[in-house]
Image 1 (cartoon, rainbow, N blue to C red):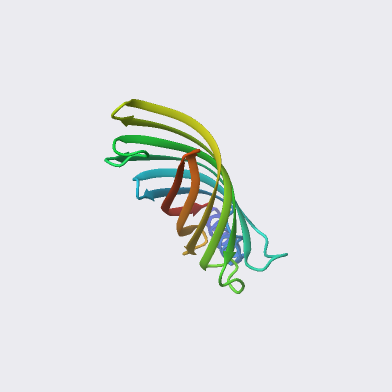
Image 2 (cartoon, rainbow, N blue to C red):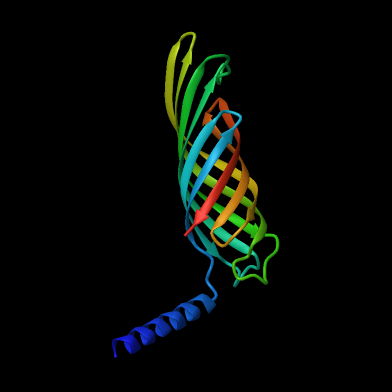
Length: 181
């Protein structure tokens, strides 16, 4: 009798696994992102949420991004030579246009992004006249290209344009990977 129960339990488990495996999964909507920034070396991370708007607009997805970055520089500073660090916290929204929509339920392949956000900057700079530190909030924009490799993994290159303070613009190239779960 125990052998029969074990056999039935194993068969039921296999059937349940097969049924779950046959379901079409929805694209993941929550994720974590890591990024490297150039030309000033930097590292950042974000929590992202992505929503599929394909029912109304084919191939369009929306993305909300909450993140933080840290950049350092040495030799060439904002106003000449020196060294320093800049930190940014941001909340941004992006439109993601999949370039090969349809067919695959998880929409794999290339995409482009366009975004805008609010950035809270804080920076410290060591110069010949001493150390300077400031905080400022500014808007910023991004444009990028990416590739969705799997249901859960994207690779992306993006350009960020913003202001650090009224006299200093920020233009950075970012390479990032996003893992959605």
